[in-house]
Image 1 (tube, helix red, strand yellow):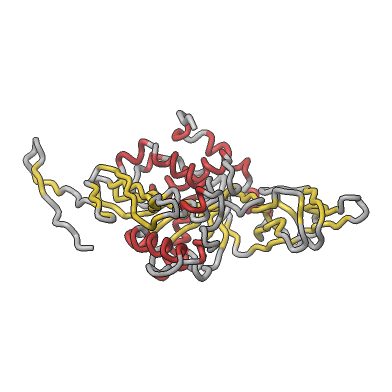
Image 2 (cartoon, helix red, strand yellow):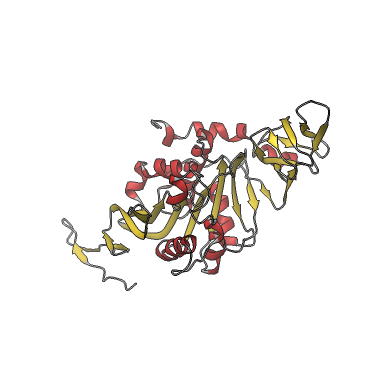
Length: 366
């Protein structure tokens, strides 16, 4: 897209010329510096003749700076990120932003409306990138999001939750080999950072091919809100914006590094059910467990058979199943390999005080 010439106007009192920042153009819409606007990018026509769009709120600051996107609901049932973006957009700090912020609360509107992870064609949008303008519905949406939003940005934050019937401890996921993505994750200051290799077809992989670092924030459950996870998400995004010099340093408090340092897990393992039945858990997300600890018991409905679920490594539980009905092979517990000392900095108790005392939530009416 060709750049517009930067107009120049004189300052009222001093007479000195000052540069007015170029407007931001998206899908044929123009957003002047210092303004925000919601742009609906056409995608398709639904079967009932309702137009489907990708809606983006553009917050275009008066001062120069980077362009960053924050997206949610790539999986349509992962609604917690939608709430994070809603609260983020209401903060006074964004009125004085430097650079440009693109907020995309609902990427997969089809799944969002249908309370489904997937699109109507049963494809996973986060396995459909970079997409194709002439491909399936998922492929077209992936292409639209990548070309109109991601490619316009210097970096991005993609908000997710656990899959249905699981619960995630708030965490950031990046490929630790990507130094810029790791810096973003560290700036976010989540309870824990998890090394996650790039997966073919994912947004992260497609963005990486374009040289655009993306950090994924995972927290909570599908189709559920979690106040603690929402607040960790809002403060984390603000910390990244502060790291990018887009908002004032005083906008959000940083954790005391001498007290809490974000632990980084290079490896993790899923523990799966070796039998079907009813699961009774003894541990939950945020718990530190040792190899051999009993995490839960699987029993048949008559109580004649009982199988122990044992920890295979020392580490921190970062995800756990939320329903007692399990089948053989079901994922039950996700354990990040961390020392007990490192895991103590990832505990909910270690972060709650910082979150609750943050001034950005002082007048939060939810």
